[in-house]
Image (cartoon, rainbow, N blue to C red; front, side):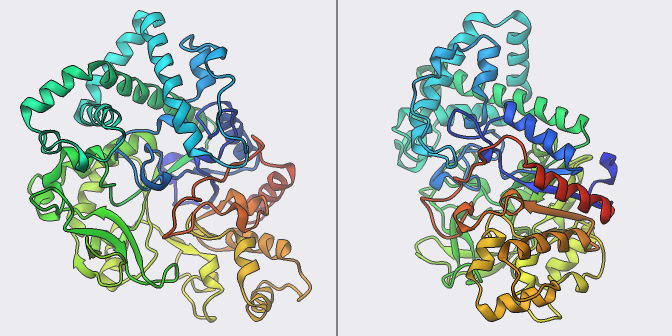
Length: 506
């Protein structure tokens, strides 16, 4: 499939975060296992690899709460590649505690050792890099100066301040007073350069992987949160672009009203944008963000697209999202900027939630595909909008479930006996059919549908239960941990997907 036809022709893919790849260092990376996974996608005749946000994770280890909307996650830098480059030795990475469970990410263990190892790599780079590599590093710093300088200073100061959020720093740094910033830059100069090195290595490794995938006609779907984290370089460096009070604390935070995921709604805690202020400079920050993401991804899924039209603003002092209110967003003023900024990259609008006519009208105006979730289909009657027979056109991306849903088998294990019978009947199965068989037929159902694109979580293809769920909305502490144990998809999965692609013309 040619890039210009992405999302327009029938295709299929797999949703799996980079963090879920196997590796000997506690979390998935951009190394060998990533290339092996691409090869599996090729063998299974897939078109897409969808990943979750790749930014550096902060609160709750969530990829949707990142220290930067532009930076990459240093955890994903492959250490074996750094060894091959001569910047690390094998002894630098052995004998360290990367976590004891190969099927789960231990973020605390990784945090305690990863940055020490990366600092050794930075020192090795300075001591051993060739002239061309140093020139490439300097070129990278110049090209990304607009966001890289603030991010690197932010991270250097954050570590110096015991990893506390910027709101707890000294007043002169919190308010970015010139003399304080100048002094700080001098004091942490080497640390600033270290964080720039991490970004240099991340983007170098990511782009090499992406180019490999593209050469095999595998295209990367990236996911970007609509909002940014309060504890981020973006908010610290651009306070005027957010709804903050005179102490630079949020007046309102983002979330959604009560829904199927939570009776109290979801209070995400992200600061709300000051859309009027952003409009004054033509949404320059958003334009730069989308341009940067278009370099990383062939397709960009905008999470919580609804918030561009109308967003749920929750008073910051409220503990739940129940008492928020709907506020009008920038609408087409922003989507026009996004269209101009992404170049050849395509857009998916994550349109789950309260879809009002203005939201649907804007999506239709942009001609961006929305999403259909099959797990939602079975909770409705025969006229439900998520049931494949009710799709009015092909411009959709179908999922069994997203990262916020249970696995298919976990979902099936949780429904009532009556509901399970209903699902089996819809799928043409007898009442004795196992949940594994039902799961496989849900996968087939997506491939059969008229939707141009179908994506399944890797956990569903591996027939994993609720223990493999990657995220439970409105909870923290046990999310974003799932990992594959094997580098490649099992032969059974490859054979199944390959047959579906051929049978249903994907």
